[in-house]
Amino acid sequence: MAHVAQIKIPATYMRGGTSKGVFFNLQDLPEAARQPGPARDALLLRVIGSPDPYGKQIDGMGGATSSTSKTVILARSTRPEHDVDYLFGQVSIDSAFIDWSGNCGNLSAAVGSFAVSNGLVPADRVPHDGIAVVRVWQANIGKTIIAHVPITGGQVQETGDFELDGVTFPAAEVQLEFMDPAAEEEGGGGSMFPTGNLVDDLEVPGVGTFKATMINAGIPTIFVNAADIGYTGTELQDAINSDEKALARFETIRAYGALRMGLIQDLGEAAKRQHTPKVAFVAPPAAYTASSGKAVGANDIDLLVRALSMGKLHHAMMGTAAVAIGTAAAIPGTLVNLAAGGGERSAVRFGHPSGTLRVGAQANRVDGEWTVVKAIMSRSARVLMEGWVRVPGDVV
Image (cartoon, rainbow, N blue to C red):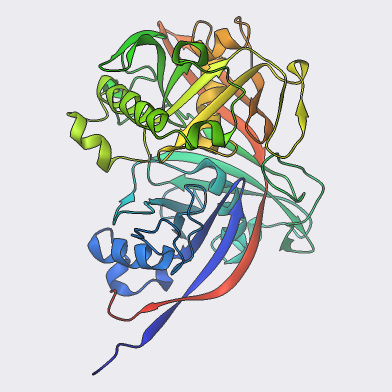
C-alpha cells in the first residue's frame, strides 16, 4: 500500500497577549493555499489538529482552547502607508471550520514582531535601538493597527519586565493602536451601534428579555449586565464552563444578538459564525481572587467584565473585546460605561478572570453619531518555536 509522505512548511509558533497561534508568511504556503478557499482551510485545520472529536487537538499544534486554536497569515502589504497584511483564522476545535469573520487582538501584538523579524518591514524603518512603528492592515475587518515594537541591537526585543495578567512570565511591552476600530461593513449599515441605540431590550426566547449594549468596535460584542443573567461578574472559568446549561444560554443570547445586530439573517447562521459576535457581561467593581490566586481589590478596577469566546468563558480577555470594552466605556450611557460609574472617560481598568487590564479609547460625537478615533492597549509577544510544521502531503 502506498503512503503519502509528509510535507514541511516554514512556520513560527508565537504567543501574542494571552493567545498562541501558528504564524505563516503567505509566500511559504503551498501554492493552492495562498488563496482563500477549501485548500487553505484544509491545510490549516490539519496544522492545528482539527476537527478533533476528542476535543484535545493531540494530532496538531492547537492547545484545545479558543485561545490556542489560532492561525495567522502575513504578507508584505501592497496598500499605501501599510507594511504588512494580517489575516487571522479562528480554528474550531471539534468541527471542520475556520472562522475568518474577525480579528484576534491578542495575536495582533505578535504581528509587528513577526513582520520585523521576517523582513516584511523595510530595513530603513527599523532602528538599531528604539521603537519600530509597524503599520498593519487587518484584512479580516479592513482596519489599521499600529504596533510599536521594541528593538534592541537591530533585533526585536522580546524579553522585559512588562507584566500582563493571564501570562505567567514578564516580557517586552508592545503598545497597540487600533485605529478607527468601529466596524464599517457589518450590521447597521456601518454604525458603531447597529440598532441605533446605546442600550436595547434584547428579547431571547427561552432565556428572557434584558438590557444589552450591542457594539461594533474591535469586534462585534453584546454586553449585558451580570446581575440580569444571574451572575456577579467575579466568576472564573469553571463557574461557567462546567455548566452546560449556562453555555447553551449564552450561545442563544449570542445568536439572537447577532440577528438583532444584522450580522446574520437567520439563527441557523450563528453556528457558522462562531468567532463573532462575542458575548460579555459587566458589573460594578468588586473584590475577587483571580485564577492565579492574585487578590483584585474593588479599588483596583473601574468595573468587572467576563467574556465568552468560541462558546467558553475566556481565561482572561480577548484583545478585540478589550477594544470594545474601552470604546463602550468611553461613551456615556452604555452598559459598560454605567458599570464603570458613568460619565466621560478616556480609559478604564477592568477586572477579568486572570487579573486586570487597562484600555483607552478616544470617542467623539459628530452630528449625533459616535465615532472612535482609536483604542490603545499594551500587550507582549514572544516567539516560542520556529522552523517547519509538517502535514500529510495529501492535505493540499
